[in-house]
Amino acid sequence: MARIETFEDLACWQKGRELTKAVYRTSRSGEFAKDFALRDQMRRACISITSNIAEGFERGGDKEFHQFLSQAKGSCGEVRSQLYVARDEAYLSDADFQTTKTLAVDTSRAIAGLMGYLNRSQLRGSKYRTADAQPT
Image (tube, rainbow, N blue to C red; front, side):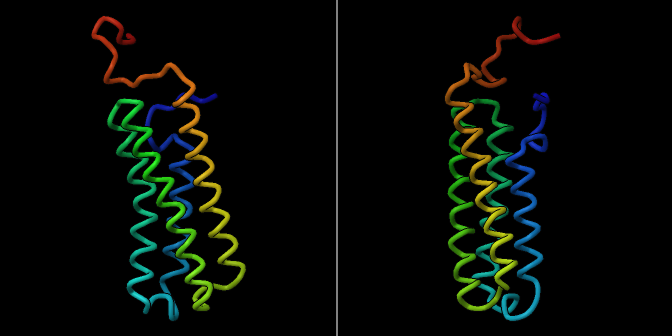
């Protein structure tokens, strides 16, 4: 397994980034672009996913990270719910709906996997390392 050194190395953050790109792409034209409330809320929810993963990672503690991952996972559900609204309003083709929904589900699963790993591991985060236990 590759060493995780930055939040950009995390698969869940990478998947969240792909989801964000898909939401921005599908919401920038047609009637979807004119529905400012739904468009902006979906975009904010996507941004929340990657932002919470990044912020939690940078906090340096496993419990805080887990909490931020939980927030990110919740935002994945929010995006999925909003995708149904966009499809019901005919803002998305069936193909765009399915592709974007799959990205949201995959992102949520990746986050859940990382949360499970944190729960099972003895990792406590860099902020808990003592000065004499720091790697050289």
